[in-house]
Image (tube, rainbow, N blue to C red; front, side):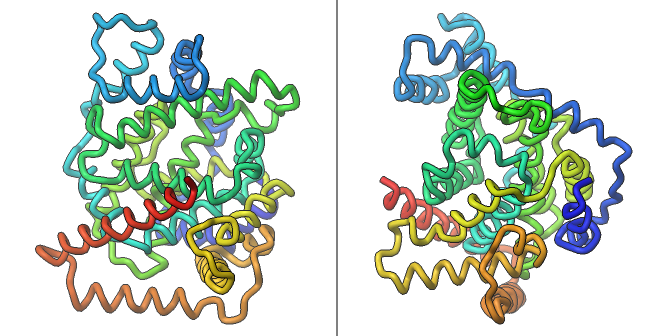
Length: 387
């Protein structure tokens, strides 16, 4: 394992994950991710080749959107691979527990702005420390498109797949997943066709199953751990619900469900195995991290310089609070005196508020409703600014 990533697990945020989750980390099954790095969504790729036949990108996107709004049957006059992919997505596995998924959605909503901080400043920023994981982003032009675009798209996706009933067939979340699956396959095929310098030996296949599992864990394990660090009280059902929600999202995206975790212990152990095949931050990682840290300047949400400066400062404080110092330094995150003041105030506020209000009955439902409103409003502001 990379020396810096080894220290991450022994002394940094990884050690905190192990303590919090009760995981028993070992490299005994490290070959699992060696194999998954060579595997990818073949069904999605075959469907996308038919989707883009005689269609430009805009037409293909509209076509997939229309298909995702429609119940597909065996008798439909569709190309076989497209039909096969959508018929598979429409087959709800027997293991899916709708009540558990709703509990996961409830937490995603009631965590309000805490969720967005955890996802942006912990999960997303942490991901930039894994050099090989980021290569697909670089090759598909993440730096050129800018951080505001990725924040907008990720937040828009997350909002729509974490609402109640969003994953029902033809619901909005399901539609977003179908389009995202198309984008994954389109990007993979484009990289393989246009870039002969893609290093299959080091990086595996573009957007391979191993990296997709790690990204899925970012939306579940890291999201939950971030909320924990910010003082959020999370019930056992909510916690298991988040993992169940993302297991089903992963399934709809084409990831074999046997590789997706059911709880924080499994997720931490899986993530440890995955990091054994990674190396820590390189120049591309630093550029991505710096772009995200300076996202406030690229975004049009705030117009005035002092607003942009303060927003950058605030996010840098949360990054420093949520991610261990060595990782932050590798990613060249700004060094800030007393960075912990705002995060600690938020943590204290969360703890007090939950004790005073309580998290049951009407108060719980109100927290879910208000969190949904706040998150949706912020997402709409990003979409408006990006348009």
